[in-house]
Image (cartoon, rainbow, N blue to C red):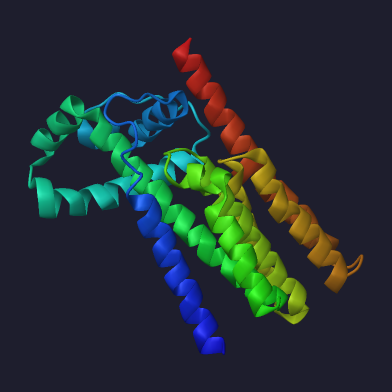
Amino acid sequence: MIFFKRNFFILLIFFFFIKNFFFLKHGLPYFLNSDEIAFAKSSLYFLGYFLNFNGALIDPYSAPLLNALFIGIIGLFYNLFFLKLNFSELSLYFYNYPDEFIYLGRLSSLFVSSFAVLIFYLILKKLKINSLISVIITLIFCNSYAFNDIAINNGKNSYSVFFYLFQYLLFLNYLINIKKFTIKSYIIFLLIGSLATGINYWNGLISVYSIIFLHFKKFKFKNKNYLILFFILFFFLGLCRHLCLAQIIFSIML
């Protein structure tokens, strides 16, 4: 039964990817989505050195950075097997066909969304929800209009959903087995939460809530220095770094 359930969810994720893959070019090359254009500019901020483009960091830094990384990896294989261009020719290609860059960005969002479905399945598994109910919930999640829209459009929302679910999975993992919650757990939540803060402030707060709850569940009012150190580092690595970066960019734009 477990083998069947695992394979069913693998097939479900595969069909989710394939189903949405054929919708990735919707509206291209003439359709303009203001959110996608803004996110593309933010991604080009990190890829501009390689493609000789001038990007502008409009969105918070984490999502465009991860998106640029995904586009770079996918674009490398896309160029290797299909385009077969050098870097200067590749830069000119994306300049003449910007819709191709948007397409690679949408493909990145689809990959991230597919990983989000996997995380969603692992959460249901951790919660030990009935198999039939798990299947129904996952089918609803995969076929919801909002999530499909996130999957086939290039924006920060796919990364936001992924990090939200991933942090919740980490929280459940330690909540179910509180003995695993050690000093390393603070570091994990610090890094993931700081990265999530660079996508959306609310995303980063999940790690904060998790640390507070898990700390008091295991240590009560002991080891307060763990919490204090976590909050200080989280402020500088997450909130302060993003606010300073945003201020610098804002000053440059002025």
